[in-house]
Length: 298
Image 1: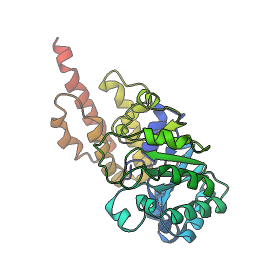
Image 2: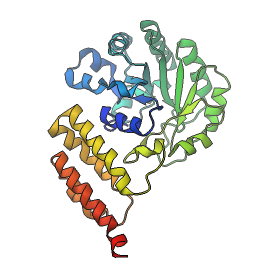
Image 3: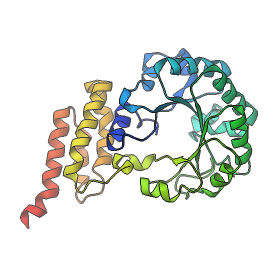
Image 4: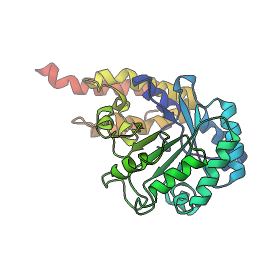
């Protein structure tokens, strides 16, 4: 969700369902200690986004401890350690899912963070590197190290995202530990998540929310019903990132919002070049009129 789940996006999803738990974007613990204001800005949030977890990654005990203090001072609900990111750059640096190949270090990081803060600690990971053979060992070890919750993406590092998620190993791990376990991987709606919940304590919805924050609630009946929230999303984006960068960031979201109706392709060029909130309003109104034309003609 890096590059998507910023403050404006989280507020938009919470507008659909105020009861969801949110996560910040993927943020380096090293960057929190040594980085500038730009990196730390990734962790800023509006009170309406609570409960919210600060999602951090790294491999150094010292920076994790310092990051814990920073996140605690900011008022986060908890801290999530990312041990699941499969990005090549992250794995090459021995962060993210690479930590599944070094369980002693993974457990030491969890323990160091748990001892450094009063905030609850969540750990997000995958089934494993190439299989789920050590998933129970990881879950038991993470709990013993001080984790308060575990989130499992139900695919391995070696499996691409188009491979169906495998939830059975997650159900089995849940039988061996007492802390809450959440799962994700291809879950598209609340109803879909409930159908896959099994003995788990919750689930995450990720990429299915791109252009569709209504995945957390009821789907709108038509595009007109989507427009007010799309406009609000854009306004929050400008509020949090400024008029220039906020609009640039909003463009990719707009492209997702207009997928799925006949003729959407014709509007993509317009949406790729919007330069202001007024431009966005104009484009949304044009799309609404275009969709309604067959109805008016009838």
